[in-house]
Amino acid sequence: MITRRNWLLRCSIFANVIVLLYICSHVMIGNNNSNNISGSNAFFIQPSSNQQSTQRSQAQLYQEEQELASILHNKELELQKHLKMQEMQNSENTKIKESDNVKLSEQLPDEESRFEIPTDQSSLQQQQKSDVLFTDTNGNNNNNNSELFSTQSNDLETKLKNILNCHTKDYEPYVEQRGDFWVLKNYIRAEHGELKCYETITYTTHADFTFLDNLIPLLERWNAPVSIALHAPGSDFLPTINSIKYLRDCLPESNLVRQFVTFHIYFSSKHVPKVVPKYDKVLFPSFNCSLNPPFFNATSAQLYKTQKKLLYPVNVGRNIARDAAMTHFILASDIELYPNPGLVRKFLEMIARKGDSWENNNPRVFPLSIFEVDSTVAVPRDKTELQELLRTNKAIPFHKRVCASCHGVPKSKEWMAANETEDLGVFHVGKRTGFFVHWEPIFVGTNVDPHYDERLSWEGKSDKMTQGYALCVLDYDFHILDNAFLVHKPGIKVLKKDPKRAVLAAKTNQLIKKIIYPELQVLYGTRKGCAV
Ligand SMILES: *[C@@H]1O[C@H](CO)[C@@H](O)[C@H](O)[C@H]1NC(C)=O
Ligand SMILES: *[C@@H]1O[C@H](CO)[C@@H](O)[C@H](O)[C@H]1NC(C)=O
Ligand SMILES: *[C@@H]1O[C@H](CO)[C@@H](O)[C@H](O)[C@H]1NC(C)=O
Ligand SMILES: *[C@@H]1O[C@H](CO)[C@@H](O)[C@H](O)[C@H]1NC(C)=O
Image (cartoon, rainbow, N blue to C red; front, side, top):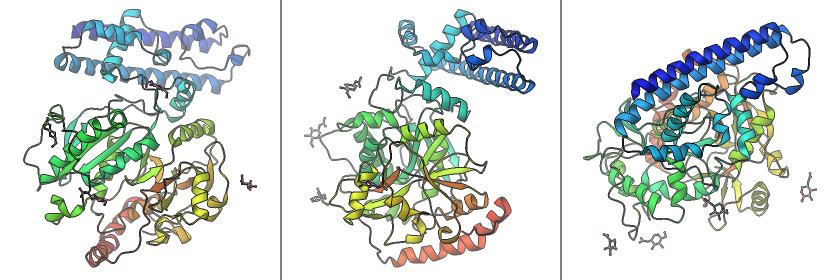
């Protein structure tokens, strides 16, 4: 079976080469009668007015060749991947019935085949079968309550696919080491299956189980994939798993958790839990839903982590969650920060609208304005509601009373004064210099952006400063979004004296100044106006 598929797929690669050569020869000769080509090969993207023009410029010819070559290259990579997956499927998953395969492949939307290079029918079918089998063994593609899989999105997706030119990542559970930590990557996976990297945005975050009460309110607003790294050393492991089971099974909103959230677990190699089930056993037996979840009224005092006086390795978690995200765009955030609903869709529409018409080639990220609201009010759903709360002092800019300069956003007064508009756009392009030299922005970015320094802990503070420095030196532009914002879980923070944390913070500052900062200067260089 494997060798037959192998053979078919190789044949199809060969056929692709032939098709490419055929098309190239047409292009070279300048044959404009390309109706039959674009008719049968929808991947051959070309404005139809061009078909009438008599001569193409050399540049166009060259560009088209390049496009074709890159399509073919991607295609080959995809085919190789399919081969690998089929082998895995065959060895692991022989139970899936042939009749199911056929049913699933019939449900394939047109979009799936739009970019296929036509080959002989049989190999194409083989390929589609494995696509579906692999991405969606649960047949879960019919959720209409999500930012994914919407029929209207086909046009948008095509544009984004071309603009972002990103690569789809794998989605396998994997045990890996990261410095002193063991990581159970993709330990409990969302049921969305493999994602196309351009179709949505991943909210990446970190927590211990006592913060998991934030997950539902977050999902109700975000309604898109979440990649979360949970710190679960020693006996924190079991309540962590039970919390996940509870969230996935026991709530009216559990379908959101199952659909969207992928959980990774990590712990220090000095604090390995007594028992760690394999990823395919971990959800059994299920949680007794008439019991309270472990995070109910939980405090950090009862954590194993606290009793053993461990620090919270915030940046290890942040980096794990980021690296596991399957989408091009990520929003690396803290779990208590809830975005306004509709952000994913509007952001992607903005990216598609902009295309490559940005004013310069500087690297860019898209910071969100952040607010705190009074514990007595509901989290605002749009900017207009937010402004009403700001007027009545029920909302304030984030950490205004704790560390104003860490979260001060350029042009924030103007931002708060400006009325909400229909689409999402860029309000102001700022830099992390001058008054904002210590800004710790939270933004929609990509995995190309510098990571967080894993030597820094939450208790030691300044945990995002070194990333901020790297962004500044690399000359990032901060495209502050106009109608997008984050709101902290209700309850306005006041400055509390914590002498132990102050000692740690002082040590951290020394670590940054004496050790990390010189390293960053070597690795990223220096730039006038940038500081950690
Ligand atoms: C689709 O959405 C409608 C209204 O929001 C809802 O009633 C229906 O159950 C949903 N269908 C599915 C398959 O989720
Ligand atoms: C679940 O918990 C409830 C309340 O403690 C208990 O009465 C019930 O027997 C439990 N069910 C199972 C299946 O253990
Ligand atoms: C949980 O916390 C709430 C408010 O903090 C309190 O009213 C309630 O009694 C607590 N419940 C338990 C079982 O401790
Ligand atoms: C903002 O909206 C308010 C209420 O809708 C309106 O009165 C005001 O003129 C608007 N301001 C601007 C600058 O458009």
